[in-house]
Amino acid sequence: MVGKTKMAARVIAEEFNSWPVAIPDSKTTLAELDAKDVMLQHSVIWLDDIERLIGAGGITEGALQRLATAGNVIVGTIRAGAYERFRPSDQLRPPEWDVLSRFEHIFISRNLTAKEQERLASAVDDPDIRDRIQTVGLGEYVGAAGQIAEALKLGAAGADSIGYALVLAAADWRRCGLTRPVRAETLVPLAEQHLDQRSRARLHDQTSFSTGLAWATRDINPNVSLLQPAGPDSYILYDYALDLISQQSIPVPVGSWAVIMAEADNSELVDIGYAARGTFNRTETAIQAWRTAASSRQGDAALTAAYNLGVLLAEQGIVDGAKAAYQQAIDSRHEIWAPAAWDRMGDLLSEQGDIDAAKAAYQEAADSGHKSWAPAAWTHMGDLLSKQGDIDAAKAAYHQVIDSGEAYWAPSAAVELGNLLRRQGDAAGAKAVYQQAIDSGHEIWAPAAWTHMGNLLSEQGDIDAAKAAYQQAIHSRQNDWAPSAAVDLGHLLRRQGDAAGAKAAYQQAIDSGHEYWALAACDHMGNLLSEQGDIDAAKAAYQQAIDSRHEILLPRRQCT
Image 1 (cartoon, one colour):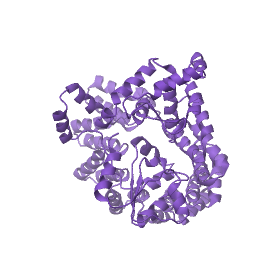
Image 2 (cartoon, one colour; image 1 turned 180 degrees about the vertical axis):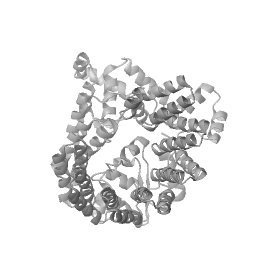
Image 3 (cartoon, helix red, strand yellow; image 1 turned 60 degrees about the horizontal axis):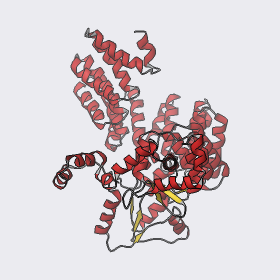
Image 4 (tube, rainbow, N blue to C red; image 1 turned 120 degrees about the horizontal axis):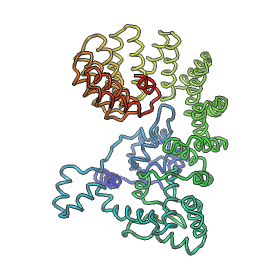
């Protein structure tokens, strides 16, 4: 409720008010038009809550590009939680991300600007109301955020246990990855998971159920209720209520996953797997969802599931199962999932020590020419060749990636090539490719390159330039490389005798809360404080590292 839909609508109205507007009413609408060679031209295509319209059976990256080439303007909106769910990791790249990545991304902050705060102050005299608007956001306040939060608190306190259980059931439906409305008859077994035995019996009494449903659907204001009707005997949960329940980290009961999976189609099973693995760390549930979808062998969703299943089984050390899942995707010759599976098959074979077979698998992926998976395979080929000591071939592989210009893998390969050249003593070559990664501006690899550049400059004795490079990485605020660079900067300053500067750098890493670098900084801070004779402070720093129970830091510090 930060205003993304209204803002997009106003832009369309002001900039394209004479254009026709096409609003798909289902996931398959645009795909069906594409299949029938019906091409929209010079229209605004409105994809509000785009997460409902992408994925298996929905609009693809290729179809999106064809629509754009035909002169259409395509506008989408998406909630931050859904956007985060589709962001790729180093192992999984949801196909939805390929669609989302085609858009220019505009992030709208719920925080009021200085001018908006001035307008708020002039419009609202009551300081308590102003504080609530500042805290929850203007959209949420206007949309009855306070009443929603109070209703949820009352439900949790027992005001209507059945109604509250129905609300939690609808939240479980959404949090497990399903976006379509949930049927009333499905709410019942989901609500059971949140009730004791006595209340479950009441849930199956029609009068009690109707009373609870009335509590959950009653109007908070003319536009808002916790559960909102969305068709015959179907409901959706109000977004802000979903946000509040998610923030409370109320777990999805074990039994709810089985109920939801039984209701899901193949593409929804893929989404359930993503939610189970990425949000709730339920690996076995994700495996079950993806195995079910893959075993259907129907459509793109089955291949998406097969690939993801292979990744999870490989992580679990179930090698034969992973190979079989990858092979299903490979045998399909699908333009995305076949090269993706070849690449991961290469990783698996490399880990098993079957180097020749791994190279062959990477080569299959590289030869596919896929815009993402071919560069990924060349990168992994370069890594493998470098480990094998075939330096010239590794360099050639990395150059293949860099020349591709792919947004993620090209700067990644530039960093890896820079590290290789640095180990070979080619400082000038390393600096050049690090600079390529820096110039890419990539949110991960540019800070990584700044950090490695800082290390190289430090080794060469160019202290001022090294400090500046580390600061660039730190200023990026990238989750991993900013604290890593802060630790490296601390080491440099400590060697230069700048104890105060080193402490400040280590403290930056500590304040990041990073699972490794913050604790490593505690360890180094302890060493520095110990050298200065500040024993109590050193003990406190070491104790912080010990309390982390980190497997690398713990043994050394316990022996100190």
